Length: 325
Image (cartoon, rainbow, N blue to C red; front, side, top):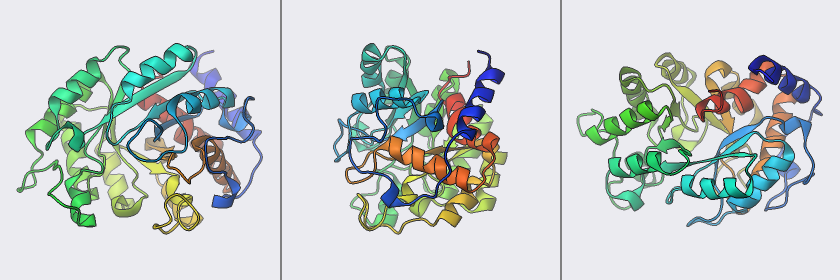
């Protein structure tokens, strides 16, 4: 099947989906997934490239192997896992031994476990690991200097810029490594302003897969103008569905749930350079597959064109993890 036929098949599958509205109550929490053991036309070809699973240092609702099995059965094309502390590209290699016909990838976050600054050696080794399954290097997330400032956490956090606002040499070197390997360089928990500075440098260096992450979430929210500036600089932008599900009664009750209208405004901004991840896996939150299903139903119910929906959950994330080569 060539690329055109594949996309047309996805359009047929997506068009056959039932329409429905989204709410936190419409998805279940935990490892079980609705309609398991059979394909779901709504999920055919989906690639979710931001998911948190066990093993991890934080409570999660499901482990990586179990979720991969469920995703394969549901009709997904690929998953990419993220851990704020540990590598998961090496585990992806083992998961593929159990599921040889399914695309599973991992990534690496530049957090405190790798030292007090962005660790170039850690990035080099991740990229060299057997199978070449590390498809994303994230700048600091929970250890980011920006998050430490905003949340008043102890210590300065790990910076991406020097005090004068210039990108640190080790960050530039990781950009170069990502450009050479043709994998994602992601902004992590950098501020919107820092992300725009990173995007400008990434364009200069020749990074083809620079991603500004969760631009619809919490302290990382970008304005429409900032999103368009990032895209003008060559970035892709990620919208996470998690904010539509957290809030009272969820695994993240401390946050205010994002409104449907606000989420849709983000999604409609520039689908050609955007994608949607669930960012799910937290204990007390829905199974990521149920979350993605609810997201797609919500987008379909809001009359998001099928072509845009395919870009958001299938075509663009597949491109970013290297499945269109």
